[in-house]
Length: 446
Ligand code: PA5
Figure 1 (cartoon, rainbow, N blue to C red):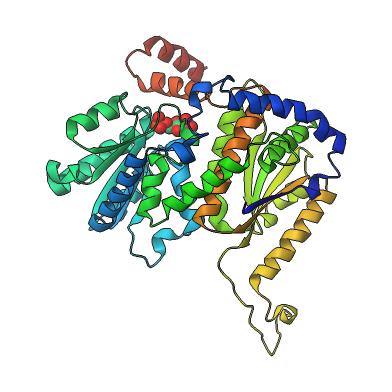
Figure 2: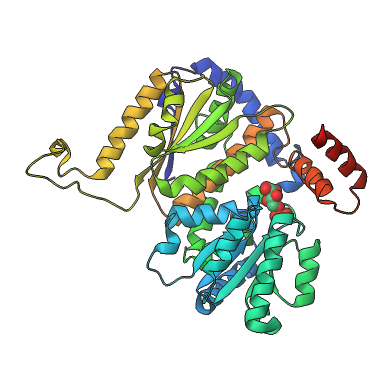
């Protein structure tokens, strides 16, 4: 495995008997998952997905990605939540957060329909001016408001520019195989469609067409991504937390949670990891945060955030533990130049690689935070490529499911997401919500 769990920096917070005690609960959680009789068991398609994915559709994704690469300068990816974060996380992790500004032979990729911001929408529309554009709209339910609004806008934009028939060749839809307005609409319009499997929930769907089509358009090797995930799925099978790093991670976070550590901060020293942390936050937040329980997932990019949230982590309310993502070889290096005048007094760093400085900053920070009462879990990746990222994605998905079962919640539903939607629809005057609208408007008045 290219992933190593280093738990040395939690050793002063967790005694060995606590690992022994939690093992039986891990066994139960693992059994629920493997025998598919836990809560949400109709959403376990992701477990064997790295081996059991639809090969025909996978091949079609590659062909379609090539077609998109050839026919446009800009791909607009429309989706929200699980239909958005995975693709963006992988593209930014493996390419760059500045992917669109790089010199490249793949299209720019802009994400839309992930907010209700007029500014954001107008900006993406402006970026399409004078460019050849394709659209990949992604919505499992096919009814989510934010992407539906954006799709209406970009569909019209494409139809005005290329005509209905031309637009048809540039619109690609990823949705349920049979249900939802989007599926019906796509069939009627003749768009090429890809399927979100019934048994894979949004936040576990990055390795389906949901993530894979935009990722392939960005020129990332999706075979390697799947191979990495498959390797992880074959590795993390034994429930023994002395042998299974993934289950051990789930065990550690649960032990810490029971000691009052209710906030987990994912820390990375690489800006390319920021969107990966966003993906991870959705995965854990939506899976665990229910029934008035759960660990709140947060994230930082160091050393940037050592100059802001670092203060709180070191010295604030002691409810935090950190999970550090440490990429040993990112593929880049930078030697710090010498200055004969040494005006800035920095010549003690001359000739040193920036990676070495980063490593010392990380080691120093981990020790300081541990001294400040913040347990640190370190997840070490030996390199930055599609295979390793595939492993990491599967590692976190599996650990998330085990964590949810340890906590006694259904890790695969998201009932809380509905509350805001109902209120929003009522306040917007959606038919069927009349009574609720009146009640809410009264509350807003008083
Ligand atoms: O993880 C989830 O299930 C959610 O975040 C959904 O992905 C999100 O709400 C978008 O839903 P849909 O793909 O149906 O538009």
